[in-house]
Length: 197
Image 1 (cartoon, rainbow, N blue to C red):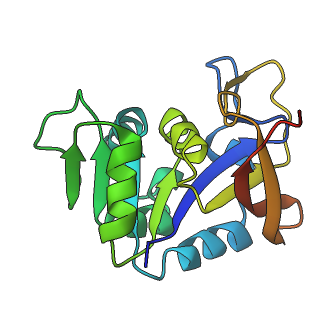
Image 2 (spheres, rainbow, N blue to C red; image 1 turned 180 degrees about the horizontal axis):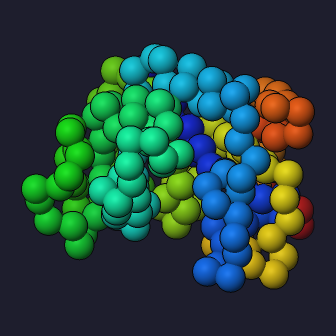
């Protein structure tokens, strides 16, 4: 039996994952509330193996290194995620890395994740790591696309469209929920769109 793989990403309503230095939003675009944070923590109750690309991994390491215990970067779900085993797909990172149980694996991300899906006895999950996950979706390796949409439009300051580099996909809605009144979590099964002839 192959392990399931979830591509988990945060986005503004207009589809951006981050914002430029001109934005003053802060983490979660300043919209997080207790329901979101409790739900995120509960979603990491069961064991997972995390899978990150090098850029997202570096960003997390840097954010955690420069944060304080009271900052939102160290929310309990992030702390729990950090305690899980992680595979970092990278040809540029060299060990040792500042993460409790991280393994850096060089090579083709699609091949690495296909192998992990066959070998892992726990589900696989990735947060961010956009270009890696676009490639994994195109290869049919993403079982669940979990998009948490925050109630903001970042038309002027948004950068990094979370799905802007992906191929065309049909989506089957598996789950949906509203958190803190106006944050939407949507979980889909993506299937590569077959063009009609």
